[in-house]
Length: 219
Image (cartoon, rainbow, N blue to C red; front, side, top):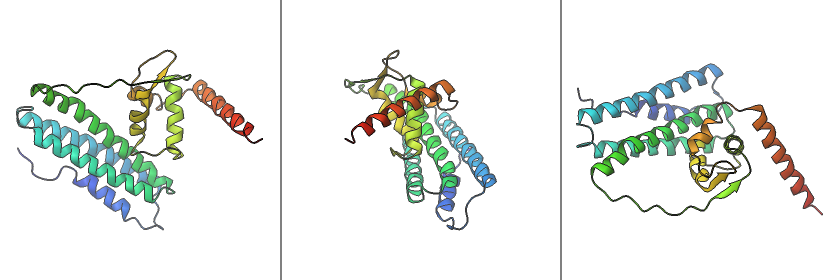
């Protein structure tokens, strides 16, 4: 059965409601948890619906437009959510909702691009883009420690991007470690889900060394 309703309608409404939230009406922890759960469920439903649409259209023979429409709307929602977070960055409770929403949109976009767009290009016998050489910087931290450091920098807004995933996608390709010449941004992100005390200790020592070096410039 073909559905003609807008698949991003509920996420659009959630972002609009958050944008119109009165300043004196802060969200409770329970409200935040319910919204976070609703956002995750909605993202899963959107992806399921896209897969159903593509399957119904005989996979990729007639799916280019719908894939493009999904990616366009994901980018549109991500931009709106980023604008909302930028205009109300002091509301930490609101940030706890918007950040997972941004990361969820980013992950959904990556999944769609990897699973469907690349297949579409191959099926169309398009020439593969020429890869350019990437010059890497050796970082004397582990992948887990790099992820931890970048996550902290992102959360205190030392660096700003649409999401933490975008921070990693932008920076990680230019880094290597003593043990790994190449590692994925996903592996760096996965390490931040459960941080080990030993890695926290190493990063703190690095930051202490940086602070001492900076203080030495004051002569």
